Image 1 (cartoon, rainbow, N blue to C red):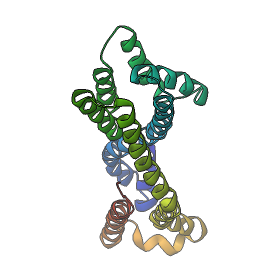
Image 2 (spheres, rainbow, N blue to C red):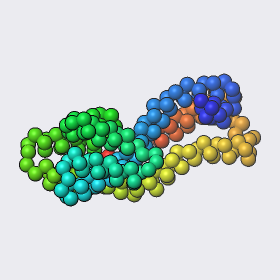
Image 3 (cartoon, rainbow, N blue to C red):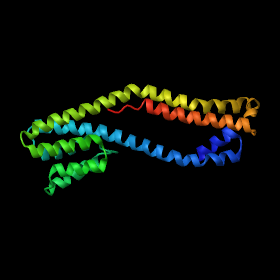
Image 4 (cartoon, one colour):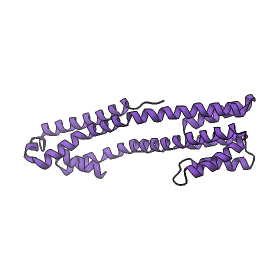
Length: 225
């Protein structure tokens, strides 16, 4: 709300303009929520990749699926001693295993709690493998490898796009920074935009176009794997 108010003062040089911009702050809340959710999911995705590698290593060593999960939880505690997004969910699965809850059911509950596509895929694969029988350790080892590789590809794409993401954010903020620069260095040059109908209309159109450009640019650089 403070940012919206300051933007209104910067663009309209009026407290009325600032108050008129305040409702737009509520439109930003869903965008901020989605951004926070994506950051959380990205961190969980990386931790889940490490969990899969550790789990696959245990399966190759001859552990059962349940024991491999418990061993993987212990390794995850060493990898992420603090601020782990996934540790609580992994520990919950291990606790359910200790009371004889089927691992496919526990992992499916974990997927529902974390809301991560990769965990859903792993849980469904585990359920199918349990029902079909066969060499469960070999099947889950391959499935874990495939999902982990998918996460790695997604991480590589995000790394390659990080520079473009930064450029897009800078370009989206440039109109506001330029307006601020002109207000601070040569305020008289900007007087034609304020306190008249034509100037207010021009500024409003520019603000809407800047917002549309930001949304468009964000969609262009959004690549899902």
